[in-house]
Structures are given as C-alpha cells and as structure tokens.
Amino acid sequence: MKKIGIIVGSLREQSYNRMIAATVPELGLAEETAYEYISIADLPLYNADIDVGDGPEAVRLYREAIRGADGLLIVSPEYNSGIPGVLKNALDWASTPTRTAALIHKPVGIVGSTPGPKGTILSQQQIRQTLEATQSWVLPFQKMYISQVMDKVDAERGRLTDETTLKYLKRYVQTLLGWIDQSQGLQ
Image 1 (spheres, rainbow, N blue to C red):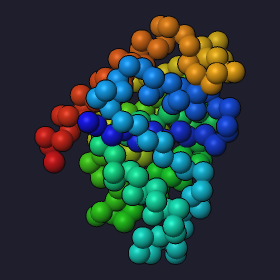
Image 2: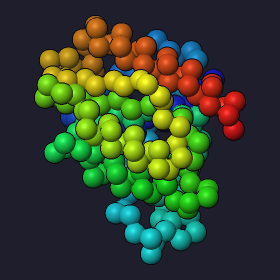
Image 3: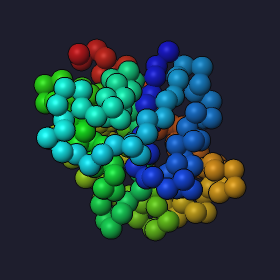
Image 4: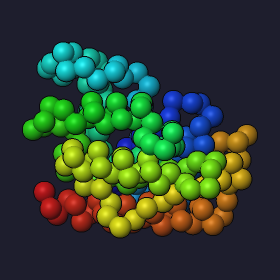
C-alpha cells in the first residue's frame, strides 16, 4: 500500500484547496493508498540559525511525515500570481539539510485551484521550480489547474463536487501513483 502525504498550501480553514485535498481520499483509490495530511501551520519562518540538529519540534515532525510518505500531493492556491508564502516556507524547511533533505527524490504531484479564470498556472510554475531545486521528482507533463473553483465545490460539505473535475482529479492521482512506482525504481 502506498502512503501519500497531502500538503495544503493555505492555512484558511474554508480554503477551496483544503476542500479539494479532503476529497482526494474519497476518490475510490483507498484500497491501494493511504493518505496523511501534513500540516504546515505550526512551522516557524525559515531561519538557518534555528535549523540545527533536527530543528524545532514542529519542523522535525513535518520532515518526518514527508520522509514517511511514498509521495506527496501539494494542493495550493495562487496568491498575487505566485506561490503562497506559507507553502514556500514549508518547502524551504523540507529542503534542508542539503544532503539528507526530506524532499530529495520524493515523487510529488501539484494541484491548485482559484476562483479566477486562469487556475494556478503561475504558482504551480514556481512550486515546480522550487521542488526541482530540492531534487524532488515532480510528476512530469501533468498539470491540474482548477479555475472558478467556487462553482465546483460544496462549501457546506467541504468537498469538490463537480463531476468532470472529480474525474480529472482521480486520473491525476492515479497518474501520481504510477509515478511513485516508476520513481521507486530510480532510487
């Protein structure tokens, strides 16, 4: 059974991206996959002065959760045409120490949603660039941008409900699972 760590790039409780992340375990892939939400809410701002040993306790637990996952799914909004600061901070913490960083050779998929018409094109480019710099293995050639997300979720239930988008999300996660299998052969 594969274990997927899910990181949401927003701290907002009613985040559309949190709703999408909450939908992933319900896609019908549960028999072959276990999911764990990896919180970034308690991480301090990155500071190399406190990144000694295992770092602060919240950082140690965060890195441990990433290391324990076979792959990651990042579900993130776009803020001001870019990566949310809280997510960039989390990726920075997972990128150190350089030779043993939790993100090295970690298969990663990226999904993002926004109320706007362009999805999360720019933030996903920046997330991908950051992950590639950390030697993560980002799912190649596959992108999932969800635009006008407010019309595709049931905010009361906190879930993605648009049937077409659900099919694409399921296919994306299936592709990520295949990428994890391929990546394990590369290590």
